[in-house]
Length: 154
Length: 154
DNA sequence: CTCCACCCTGTAGTCACTACAGGGTCAAGC
DNA sequence: GCTTGACCCTGTAGTGACTACAGGGTGGAG
Image (cartoon, rainbow over the protein chains, first blue to last red):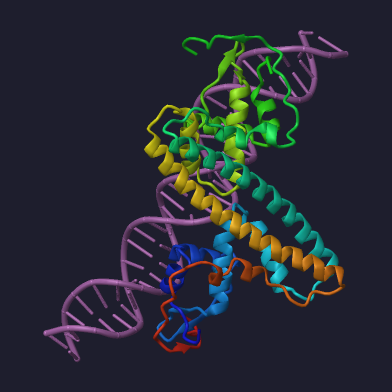
C-alpha cells in the first residue's frame, strides 16, 4: 500500500467508528498521522495494522491497558528480555483461560444444535459451561441469617 | 449448597463488585433474590451459576445483549427449535472467530517467549497476529489527495 | 452498649466508546 | 466557476457498563 488512507477508509477497513479512531489517537493508542493540505488525517499501513490489532484484541475482551501492554511488546523490540517474558507469560495465561472457556461454551452450543437437529431441546447446559464449578473460584461463604419473605412496603 | 449467600459473598465468589451485581439485577440480567428479615439479599446456587456465566462471558468480550441471548437459550428450554438453532449458530460463528484469534495471538506470544529463552528478541509479530491480513476485511480505499506537511498554527 | 464489617438505596463518576453540532474540504457534475 | 453532497475537522455531550461514594440500617462479637 503506497497511497495514504482517509480516516473514513481506515474506519471501514477495521469496522471502527471514526470517533473511536480519533479517541484512540487522543489516548495515545494510535500515533497521530500526517495531514493533507486540507488538514485531513493521512494514515498508512502501520496505522491500519495497529488499529486492526487494537479492535480485534478489544473484541476478545482485553482491556485497553492490556492492549497497551501487548503493543508495547512490539514497540520496544530491543527491551529487557525479563520483562518481555513476564508480560508474555501473564497474557498467555489469560489467553489460555479464554480459549478454554470458549471451547467449553462452543461444546454446549454444538450440543444444543445437535438436539435441535433431533427435533427437541431437552438439556441446555449453556450456563454450566461457564459456571462456577468449571473454575477455581473461592468457595462461597454462606449467609448465616435466616431468609425471610421480602418486606412489604419498604 | 443449602445456605443462602449475602451479596458480598456472591461478589467474592465471582470476582464481581457488589454494585455490579445490583446493576445486573436492575437491568434484569439477574433475577431479584429473596431477602432476609434485615432486608439483605439472599442468593442461592442458581444466582451463583448465572452470575458466574455472565462474568465469564463478559470477560470473553460478549456484549450484555449477547449474554442475554445466551441466557435466554437456557431460560426457555422448550422454545422453538428454529430460533434456538439460529442463535446458537450465530454465536458459534463468533466463538470460532475468537478462538482462531486467540490461538493466533497465543502462537506469537509463545514465539516471543522462545526468543527470550534464546536471550534476545529479534522478531515480534504480535501486531500481525491480529492484523488486517488475517481477516477478510474490505480492501482499504486509498486517499487520493496528496499528503502535505501538518498545517502550522491551525 | 459499642464497634466494625456488612448491607441498603440512590446519586454521581469513570471508562470506552459514540453521536452530534457547526463549520471547512473535496471532487463530480452542470 | 458554481452547486451539491459526501467527507473531514474540533469540541461537546450522551450512552452503556460498570464503579465509587454518601447517609443510614443490620448483625454479631466483645
